[in-house]
Length: 381
Image 1: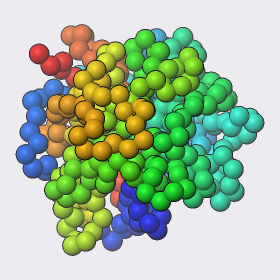
Image 2 (image 1 turned 90 degrees about the horizontal axis):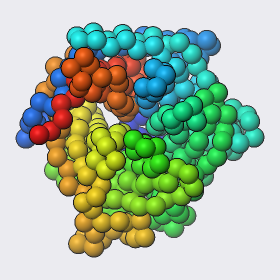
Image 3 (image 1 turned 60 degrees about the vertical axis):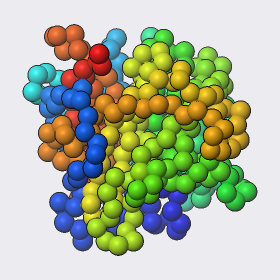
């Protein structure tokens, strides 16, 4: 999410405040020039009720999604900054078949600090988190989850390991250049930090994606202007240390706001490994009055420079990953497009093809929706 000032101008706050806009303003819009081969085929959609109450918690803000093929367990991470209830994730029952998808909430788990307490509200200070992405570790080893941190609370982004009961295990060692900085024009942008999380098939490497460029690396995307590079960092799961990093160039904002001078942005909202080296990258754009746009790309992490040692990414000083369009969500037959932030592999179909399941973060906003969408994924030739 963008680093606008004051905080009330971020996408999350804008969407919550858009009660005067018609509902049609929040559905997807055409993305000029972004036609893709049909590598996704819609299987089904499902939604959860707005501000659904489950065991005393408010279901919404689902920003991360994962499925454990060994156990069949599904989890969805809530990005509530402990403002409604303490930071948490939900367990789900997901039924997926040809042309059918159903989702039921089955459990809720509170995430815990290293001291064993629920994470505090921003107003209380302390270890404030903004949960955004989640992945299962194999063989019951728990979960990895990423937080964007909170600039106002002086809490930088984190990657954490938790048990399945929410108990804290350890923090990963986040490189200094990915954290918030006191020096103007450097460091992470507020609400534009750890947004995507992917785990390699052998579970030895976790990749974490920044939503937008660091201040010193370039601008945020604008209408007709691509943004600076988003850094995607590989962490060794065993040691918790960063071992490599690649640069990803996000698209320009695909459509201008309907109101002159209105807010717009584009950034990386989730990543997912295809294999040990290839990755799916989901770009999510919002323009005030024009709605959402979602585009899915494929990259190969082997084809880029290692930017981990570089404090600043200047033009011509590094080689970004090449990206290939997998799908423009405008072309997939969805009933609407919303703020999709979670993405994972589901069970395979009878034909052996993988399924891709996505979820949207409704920002606890009545004009948005918690939307699950399942697709058959077709490998490229």
